[in-house]
Image (cartoon, rainbow, N blue to C red; front, side, top):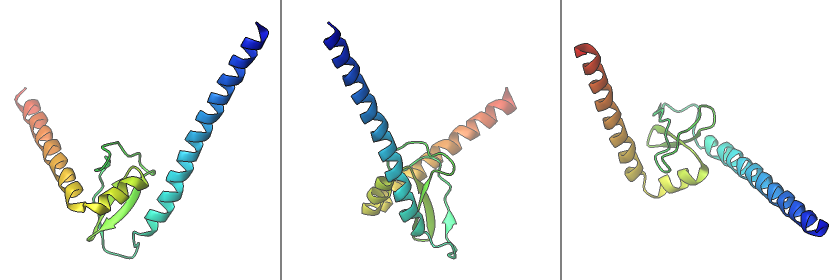
Length: 120
């Protein structure tokens, strides 16, 4: 009976260790990728910051200060992860179109909200 409990405790400890190590490893990979990809943005260029707070590839929200920046044709886009930048590079027009469509939806929603507050 005591051996079963010991085995269960060891198994749980091992799972926790793997989980914590995996999370730390992913954060490290993201930080390393962030450093590499941010260097691709030339600070002396006249590129325009798009300022997107949602990754056009993954659709995930991007926290301020944690974005990974990538410059494409004079525009600086924000991404959630290095893999998002790599995917963007394969077909930038597709993801630029995604951002444009989101922008149109957000603009329409703001207009509806403003119209309702004026009439309401």
